[in-house]
Length: 243
Image (tube, rainbow, N blue to C red; front, side, top):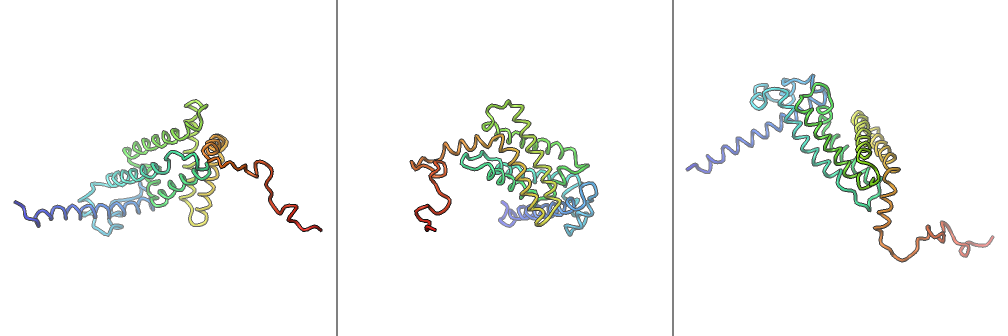
């Protein structure tokens, strides 16, 4: 029967292997993001990781295998991000706030993982990655359609699909500008992207959301002064000193 020490050794080797793989993938992400996939090399990745090329080849046979593994891990993280960003909209949430929250989650993911955009949209990426990205994009479009359909009940399915595609196209165009900038410029582009999406969607779904919010609001029995015209923006005649 294996001793406790003998049982621990395979687990330790496995843990060391996982740490090495993580180290190599982090180095690959840095190299791919700075040089692009096509110009990257296994030697550059090994150098970035601080290991010999021979060590790299113990885990990955070539650059494509590294990119595929990295891409799969990133896409799993991306699916988790869009699952949160594209959750059903709470009717009590104003459209502008819902759009801003979704954009923030997507932008945060891409800014923390700039290599994702490089691998998914750069030239000469492995065909398998391109296929997986296309599948992810289709899933995102479907999720946006699911969000929009209840808000556009009078629109045919094809029209809802077009709106979803326009939303994604606007986001992708804005994302490229965001990733190409830094500091205050980046923040400004993020805000511009939010504004563009809100201004596109508000005429389409804003009224229905506001109606839902009004219906869900508790009836306090007290008339809204602004709605009834009895409210005042400043001092009343009684409280204003006579000239």
